[in-house]
Image 1 (cartoon, rainbow over the protein chains, first blue to last red):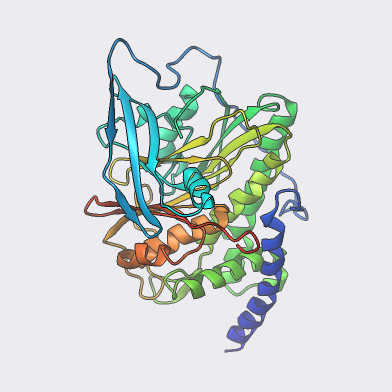
Image 2 (image 1 turned 180 degrees about the vertical axis):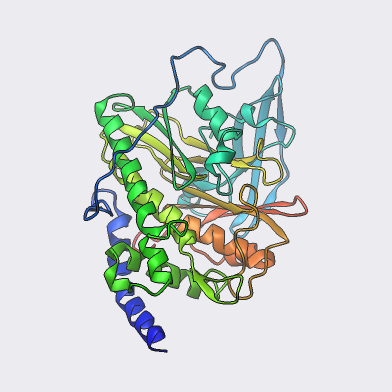
Length: 159
Length: 265
């Protein structure tokens, strides 16, 4: 019982801290952080640095040999803020362009935010490598699983 | 918003907390001593976080706290900060998210990893943000922070993996400045449960949240995943978030963001 009380009081104290934390992260310039383990012993960090020499692996998905491009307009997806529609252009089985043709209506702010932050659904028949991506977001990847992962392929190819 | 221009980023990879960390840098300091220094600093931050918060290390502050050997005040202040974030997430998710999850013997185990990953990645991103004229895209175990200062550079394109087939992407999020976090059971099996009763999500396959801040993108993705059937409903009540819910029956639903109140979170 005593432990519960202690827990509660430390949580209350922590909520005050939290307040400060949020203000400090809202602006990039305002952030002032100490390394978390500054009081602890320093460690050396082994970092392997990225890709080897640039060996001309196939880069971004531009036009592949002599195939015509196809543009498909997806269904309108209803979101809370209004309808969204996406247009995808493929060429030689590779995704070459994705355009959001319809944003939720409203003020310009809506369009600006959504154009930066709405996931664009990709045709399931496309291989991941052709989607022209910089990074992969997925359920927690372990270092063991990384070896065979799409992220690993991206890192190695420098796509 | 067409995909465009090949600006080939410089890439860096390292491992910490049993997770891969990938960095793409482009711009003035992508490949010089300053850029590499910031990357080393980012990694050092994650190593420090691991030492304090790891539930796999018996000697971490969090492990000792869980065993009752020390109190919160004996820990670095970041522990209280993370626990407070967890408490807020618990309240806002109706208890589905909790840093004290039900353990196998019925005892509640302190496991703040649901908060720590995104929060730590935001911290690790800090030295990278200080690089002048340099954009970055940082992934810590699949949670991604993007930062773009160069107007002449394209958006970062973050692929969202297919929970059934991690070799494919289901969607792409173009991000200039912001974060993308995904929660699901793909790589680690059922490690997220509803903290209220310990049930494993069945209806939802993965949840991706896009937000200005990775700490909350990660928390919300985990909380929504734990909420299972009501994930999408709950996410739509969250301000400033957009993203994707993939259901176990393969349905994919996008949810949108509304303009963010600059004064608030």
